[in-house]
Amino acid sequence: MINLNPGSALDADGAYAIRRGGNTQVVALLGAIGSGKTTLIAGLLQSFLTGPLAGYSFKRSDTLLAFEERCFESRVASGAPSASTVRTSSLSGQHYYHLEVVKNVGEASKRLLLLDMSGEFYEAALSSNEEAAQLQSLSGVDRIVHLLDGRKLGDSSQREKVYSTARQLLRRLYETKVLQPEVPLQMVVSKLDQLAPSSDSEAVSSAIASVEDRFKRERARGSWEVFGIASSPEVNTSFAVRFGVPELFGSWLNDVVKSESPDQRVRVAAGGIASLGPAWAPERYTRE
Ligand SMILES: Nc1nc2c(ncn2[C@@H]2O[C@H](COP(=O)(O)OP(=O)(O)O)[C@@H](O)[C@H]2O)c(=O)[nH]1
Ligand SMILES: [Mg+2]
Image (cartoon, rainbow, N blue to C red; front, top):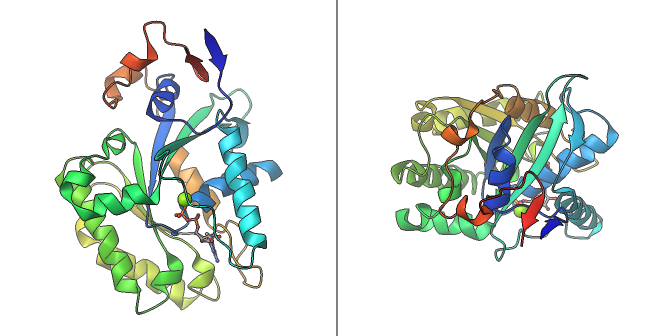
């Protein structure tokens, strides 16, 4: 029997089913607990509610429910005395969010799968190469986006820890060959509103410069970029809501190439294809 999936976040098999349709970019979001990954993801849907983002219009999402839950959580959090997006649950582990967007009428749509890992995965991967090697779901992604908490970068007592933790994680992922050196890497300074008084201030440019400086080794590998965002700035700051997010989002889609044979370039986690069964069903249908 085939059931319509309710729109919750996808697991690796669900993500594979989407990716198999081609024209899909898989973007993995990494970063310490609280660095702003979930807020960034929720903000994408919120932005599409008001119009196009980076010139792209929303077409569909097979994970609408999951997006809405994240948006709801961040709205609740922003009304709470001590704001905090609900922690991405460790039980469910690794979530993929799906977006299908289109630039101009008549053009092929582009698909994006965003991988958000629970903080526990991140912490475990930091602790040893053996744990890092478990993150096989990262081995097939098209892009790695590592968030650096801007609030902590603005605090001299926490800054170096933020850099060294990120370096350690990346080093483990490269050493264990979970990540190939050619996979594009973006370092994203989040919460710019907590780091600097304005987007054109000295503090922003020096944070960007110090990211360039602290990740010399990573910079030497393939494609490398630094971005700054404020997904959910405090209201009393000069930063617009989702400052820098359109630029980041646009960068994830610009180089989508239509692959004639997605099977050849996709690497699937063990059991991925087999569990889909012989008569694989497209998009949001799961077999029972
Ligand atoms: N001031 C400010 N706070 C933010 C921003 N982005 C996220 N946050 C807050 O940072 C906290 C952690 O964010 P979350 O997205 O849950 O981090 P995650 O653990 O990486 O998913 C929450 O309280 C968010 O409201 C931002 O741009 N500015
Ligand atoms: Mg989260």
